[in-house]
Image 1: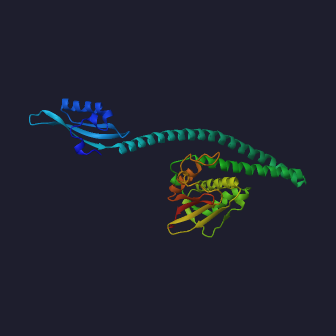
Image 2: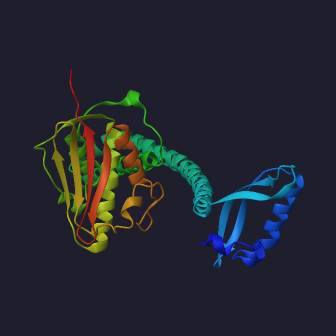
Amino acid sequence: MILNGLLIGKTDFDLPWKEQAAFLRKIDLEIIKSKKSYVIEEPVVINGEVRVFLSSKVPLENEHEKTIGILGISLDITDRKKAEAKAIQLEKDNAVVEAKHQIVTDLANSIAHEIGNLLGGTTINMQLLGYKLKPKITELIEKHDDKCQEILGLFDNLEKSMKNANFMFDSIKMNMRSGTINKSQLELVDIAEDIETVLTSCFPEEDIVANLKWNKEENFEYVGIPAYTRNVLINLIKNAIYFIKEEKRGDITITLKKDKKFNKLVFEDTARGIPIEILPKIFTRFSTTRKGGTGVGLAFCKMVMQEYGGDIICESELGKYTRFILTFPVTIIE
């Protein structure tokens, strides 16, 4: 701050912004010459720091309309300019990220299409092979051929594997979706049925899931799409299994809670937990802390739950637990 008394008799060359004095002097002379007012942003170095001032200057005239000086008001807008610069940079960064996301999504969809064709063709051929050979194998089994029993068992295992592969592939494709869901597909669904289907169909040989604790005491119904909800559960279970195996410790618990406005599904694992600085980013698309992760699973979960009119939030303490709370609007049957 410069006191008024210290300004009298001084020029810009005598003040802290003397390095810009020639530039400022040029503007002042232009105002005097043109007799027009100016509004201009003026960068000024003060104590080694560049400050930006929004200056409004008008020519000062005497009674004979002769310009005798300049009247000016300057407002320090440095902080505003910095905020604007950050906003512009953020917008550019977001545009770059969005473009990258689109490229990744397009590539993933293209790969998914090709894999889908392969899985579809393999599944059809398996079904045809089973249709033609199973009756003959069954016939041989009746003749007490134990080896044929083994072959029939292999067919059953292959069919189960193909079914699981298709189920998981559909899950991956679903994760790549964003935006909104088709509301015409909404139906009344039993949440316990979703949980049982996922546990038995997707993780039949997973010991961690076999030891998963849950009960149906507060089972509830919700309005949603079973395939989408089951995929939400698959994402949560897959993440929990990954970190339990990484830490070589931990359990999974699913708790159902009924309430007046929102019913809840609480999914918790006691493996690693999530660092507090990472927690706000976990539902951001393409953000991941998992080795080999894509960062689309939890973003998909968020989209689905919000489309249902509910939400999914995460609470965690590093080294202790990770808890996901899924809220479903209470269904009113008229």
